[in-house]
Amino acid sequence: MIHIHLYGELTDIVGKEKIEMSSFQSLRKCLDALKEEFPSLNSKVYRVALNNEIIDEDVQLKQGDIIALMPPFAGG
Amino acid sequence: MKRKEPKNIFLDGAISPEKIADSIAHHQVKTNIGAHDIFLGQVRADKIDGKEVKAIEYSANIELALKEVHEIREATFEKFDLTCMHIYHSLGIVNAGELCLFVFTSSAHRNEAMEACRYLVEEIKAKAPIFGKEIFQDDTHVWKVNK
Image (tube, rainbow over all chains, first blue to last red; front, side, top):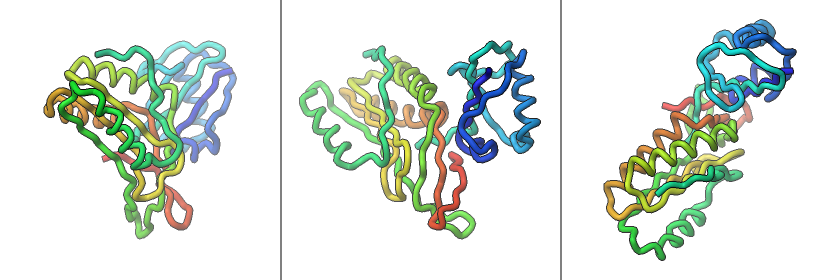
């Protein structure tokens, strides 16, 4: 399984903070499947972290990976 | 001066003025310090579409935020000649008028303390994955966007 952790506004769209998805070959395919399930994500801006590293490019996924989807930061 | 271990910056709820006063008092034994600078972030009762914000509920990707702030802290010690540095951010509910961010820098002289404090605040706002749910008087909400 791949663990998806959602933050901020994205928790309103998905309805929870954590979901699990079956394994996917790549990060892009996993995110495409997520957006298909929750089309409102398509219009949102967010950064992606894989196992606590922010990444911009597509990468291969493995069992147990944790993907964090984070909307613009709003600390302070 | 370098700090190697990531420190927890998160506190539950608002940051009390007493904590800030205590923190200042604790530095009086460090007599190589000649200047402190402090930034305090406070929750505003913004009016959005005619509704007033009564509180912000803060949440964070805690593990990643602590990692990012640790890197910011290390970079700040490299960049500025500081004696010490303290950073605290609230999680959970902080009511309008209460404090949510406390950044405290100390140095031998004012320029380093003041420049480092501003640098830290800007870096934390830009790089720490922290999120704020602005809650209105009628308990509806919007998500905070930093300007």
